[in-house]
Length: 429
Image (cartoon, rainbow, N blue to C red; front, top):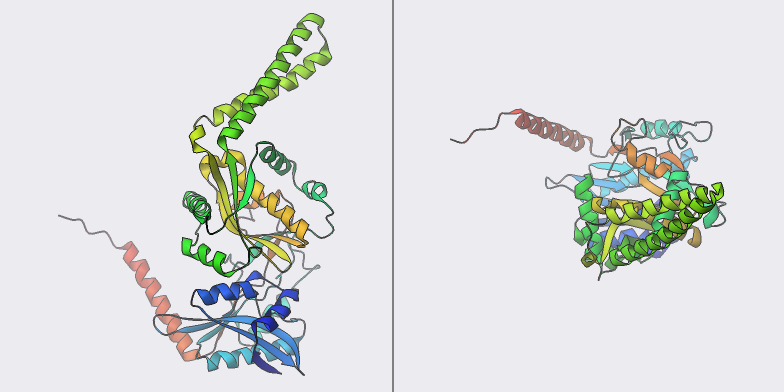
């Protein structure tokens, strides 16, 4: 076997069709990283001339000259072929040495153990613990199963295979989720994909939601670079919007119509005593009460607000899946179910374009309601799907002495930061 640097076309042809494909191992993301000045190398491994493995390597060098060679969500290869895995690992180690890297990192895009919607393990369906042991035997150190927010290893994924249409799709969601989807549609929430011209609207909503909810989002330049270097199908910066004046008018008109109906029914009940009319009156009065509450809820939004961006989410469409990378709802507008609308709208997009998976991406708080993030997990669970736990990250010391020295230096720096945090603050005179 031999390792070779691949052309963009060769890499994309292999990666796009591979069952382990991921947007992190794509030509679009490669172009983006190159534009940001990152050191990227596309490699392939041939056996008797046939391409049997490939991946994107990123080389990162710290200020102290420590270099890491990483293949995130890769390499792409058949991990059931022990001989192939051994050969590819050996070739990657050699390449990392040639590039003066101190460590090699990989994170295969494979399940660790199959799980269901509740996170319960099902090793009878899929179990890759032997692979973890095999990689350990080849010199890798497994980094454990804790949630990784950089190279995401816990996800929630909904399979769309076999789903025929939107009605079948929505019936696969929970009652609460269906109600939220239909409410948003009825209220006139609509979706829009951000462009370079409307990026400020997207970023304003994303950053505000991130600040309110405490999730980490990228700088505006990151998203601008994505729009400039990747395709409109690959990068979807999606916004959920509501036209406040139009929404208020719609609710006001519906309130007037149902109020008139209620008044007529009330008159008929008083005149005839009809139980059927009385039951109908109760239903209509509930609608009247609901519309009055809705108008009360949006009193804080004058018509001068115009069209408001209520939620913003960064999606990626590549290979076999639509991925919800990061985003959220602006708290002031949570009433409009913007995130629900975005998830649902992109599920419909996945169904229309033939993507077999919808990936909610980073998911935590699975074990119990007292855990941080459990509310987000329950929200995703309402759409249907299963918890997916990947095998995780593996690190191989390529230059052991440098690797150990760096590890000791990081430990010392961490201890120093901890000590400083415990010192009492000096009071000014």
